[in-house]
Image 1 (cartoon, rainbow, N blue to C red):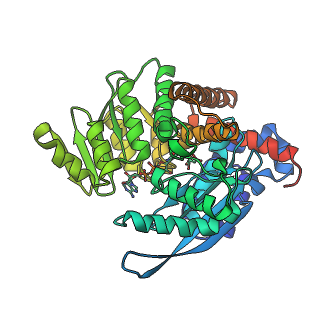
Image 2: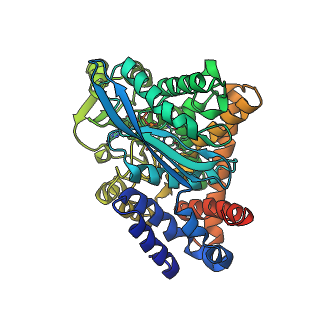
Length: 448
Ligand SMILES: NC(=O)C1=CN([C@@H]2O[C@H](COP(=O)(O)OP(=O)(O)OC[C@H]3O[C@@H](n4cnc5c(N)ncnc54)[C@H](O)[C@@H]3O)[C@@H](O)[C@H]2O)C=CC1
Ligand SMILES: O=C(O)CCC(=O)C(=O)O
């Protein structure tokens, strides 16, 4: 239910952004949480902070022409939405996926404002990407696409302006090509212009692992708050990309057993626990489908189930780490019946609104993405910090910082939810805490 004033704001968002359903969904979830804040802080409404937060500061849409291996000209669309810079330079990843359109980039950019605020670090919110489909493309094609994308993007970004990173379809390889082109056309070795870089050219230890590790740390804190832990728990992780792989790695180190993961072709169940070395070989090195994992695991008990949702596998902890709206209300009901006690969103907005209600009503510890997956962007901010001071920290120190940041986000979500009479509600805690820091900065900065 929306507070009356917020309902009018939401209607305006719908009217001004027609057809952008993912953006509408992300806005609604935040507005549903912040009603109680308006009672305590009438100054936010008087200064129209919420209306301003829902309107991006700048939206850039551009043509990306490139040539494929057959010599044919291809044209994609590029986006960068610079949503809010009250706390620092715009910060957020780039997504290359055929489903990308303005509504997806705006939902991700909007989420990023509050997530980045929750980290406590000086980073604003932004997101970008393209409808380019990397599947089946050669390394050379990927490079030519990245170079063309950056040939336009470079004029909009910079260490003090806007700092992109990876997301779906954009990993270390793509960040390397993007940074290489930026360096070439600007003639500046501006390391802090992009994060997720390779360790040999200004990248930071633990950035590759950070989103997955951070999500596992967050869930560990939620379990601890309920007097339990990962030890011996049966865990399902969706996806098998960057976030999923390093979630599996850390969950295993914390004592959990990950029995299933997925990709867009189906899922694999491996009751003895996913073989991480094999998964990394198939996904990070060979870049193949999950069916190849099951085939290589051979008679050792892994089963590949094509075309179905991994959420039909029972587990005690669910960690959606693939894409938005992957857990439906029905999936959530089935997971609760199957004994699920905690959910940590590694992906952005993977749980549909009706599914969140099912989890919260059933008393499941539910860690929303903007809190649970904030470890990735937080470690990007640490990469910027190292670039600015021409320094390079050890893996151990960087992981310790990440763990402290995740613990701090967890504790602030809980204490904020408590303060507003919503004990244990991490969704409300994350939205309110993330919102307040941005709102206070916007008030202090005048009419921006
Ligand atoms: N990379 C990062 O640091 C961060 C990523 N995220 C979010 O985590 C999620 C995963 O991102 P990454 O692991 O970086 O991307 P990735 O490209 O490395 O992996 C994406 C995975 O999701 C699967 N996937 C994509 N679309 C799917 C679909 N429609 N159905 C089933 N599976 C699908 C792919 O097969 C792949 O396994 C996204 O929601 C992203 O926004 C959130 C915070 C930071
Ligand atoms: O590391 C970053 O800057 C962005 C990570 C990201 O895209 C996200 O948090 O969704």
